[in-house]
Picture 1 (cartoon, rainbow, N blue to C red):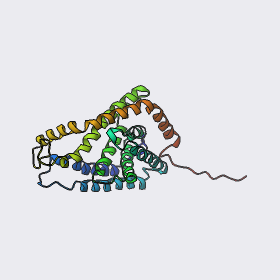
Picture 2 (picture 1 turned 180 degrees about the horizontal axis):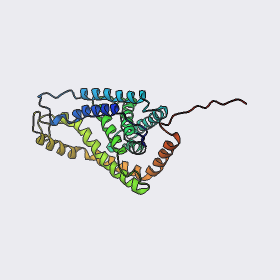
Picture 3 (picture 1 turned 135 degrees about the vertical axis):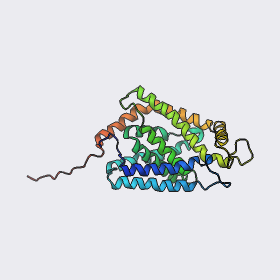
Length: 266
């Protein structure tokens, strides 16, 4: 089936993507369903999910769903995002990487957005020494945001109407990323003796209430500046970057077969 997306997942690729997402979702949501007394080693969820996700990338390349030009584009954008991320280092939510991820996924599609979020966050962690138990959370949060950005409607919108849509998405994505990051931090953050602590074997409603209170009490100082900074970047440079990415997509003719014509000597 012909699509406008740079990457087209096969049925097998879609199944692998769903499996990786389900495994990683278990790593995010375990505090609300886990019945054990000791805290689980949640990084095992994410190392398993990462293995499955990178297997997905290998499948896409081997099936020619990612051609040479697509791989080159993925490498360039991953390197760019990885280079931008340390500029803010997450300080008070100043993270310039998100607007590139959102705009790239908007132009090149949800499948490309998922892979770009996955690879760029992983490469950034390797470059900055940020490999740790939090890495799996960051990688899949970025991958899901990239995929969601590519799935946004209004494909025919242009100009400020399109930028307004992307700004709204950026604000929501900034909050979602903060929530997902707090899910990996909250169970260990406060010990067991506070009104906001995670309760092992506690009711879902009780733990959910505690988590929401914890999130709004601690994370908004990062989430709101992240949303504001992403909004500013999208408003100031979104149209120019979208135009450049669309020209790249048109001129590169992704997924079109490369033909070599032999020159006949006179």
